Image: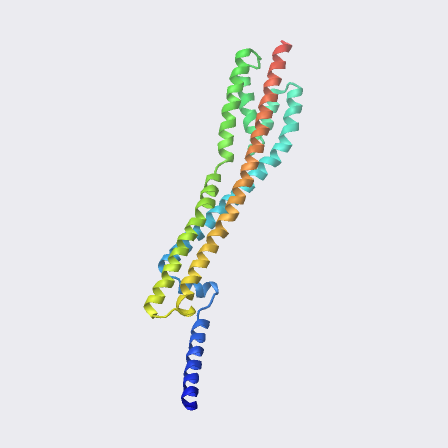
Length: 246
């Protein structure tokens, strides 16, 4: 009786050690996780990787564009204001041409060039046409500033769902392993569960920075819009004052 119990205990210990070794064989390093992934989970991971690279490229592009626009606008505003104060229209246009990356320069240039067409005569028709030119320029610059932000919004809203799809695929893989191996041990479901968790985490890792960047850059665009509106209003006021001097 005792020998039978010892034999049973020994066999149970051996099977436990075998199960433990099998569990240990399932690693959680990136390469090991990739090797255990099914083709569907790998497809999800590749899609999320492409989205992450795309969103990062947009973030870098917008950051550099906005930084250049801010820097040149700070240099442009006092210079063009001084030129207009001295009634040097041509010099103001040249200053604007030297600051092509400035959002304010693009808008102000459109108004000044429209005003120059009338030989600098500040009539009511000239002021109205200059105002329309400023509005058109604002719309064009606004579109330039928002370029790429829709990509961040799309990635930020879809990446979690792509990761959730990978989660479902991983859970299905885990249940398939249980049905195939006829066992419900941890080793049978470790691969599928790891797929589910990795794709979920990857989806969130891609989405969170994209959403944060979208909100940040949207705020910057709104601030630029306010600056362009103020510059347009000041330029129209300048034209009106010029008309009163006639």
